[in-house]
Image 1 (spheres, chains in turn yellow, red):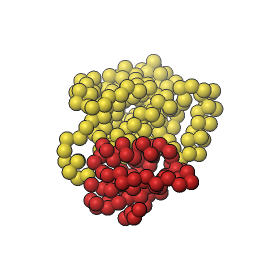
Image 2: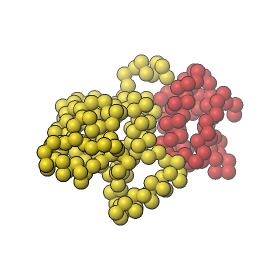
Image 3: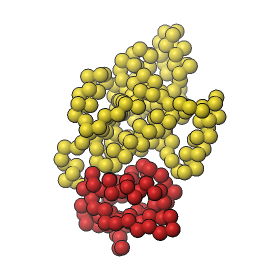
Length: 165
Length: 75
């Protein structure tokens, strides 16, 4: 294993565009599995995907009326994500979370912590942050930094596997 | 088959048995054998694939009563 780690690792880069619970789960399942296979994993969160990595507690602290309204309606946080289908005003999401717990599946919250411990790099898209008025301090501690399209593409170019979720 | 360590993954679905195996193997010495006990059928294909891409050796899978015992030798 130590030798394998000394070699250049294969890269996996995942764009998380969606802020849906189901899609976020799929992204984190692949990220953690990739890390456990010895891959160097980067997750790039953009647009609605920023919701996945916002802090669960506190205000977003955005400036201007429209951005304040946007982040009020679109609060985000791993614990607030909903299903892309059958949300049914939260009932469907609540049921899905029950079912997941029933089979010992980690929540998105747990997946984020696990991913960070496994060395997965979590990056927030700085352009989305600017447009939507999400300051860096609105993100969880697991988020490594903000970066743009050039950073993503340079990672993607070196990656063996690139996914858009 | 004799194993140096055992990892209980009964009741866990993909990707948890693989994630836990990777963490456990990291703690072990080269040449040691890990026995992974799981009841998720997916492990039959997942573990050999994980071994193939990490360079560890999948020594075999024993199946009985809906449980799978997978033996992984650390390289």
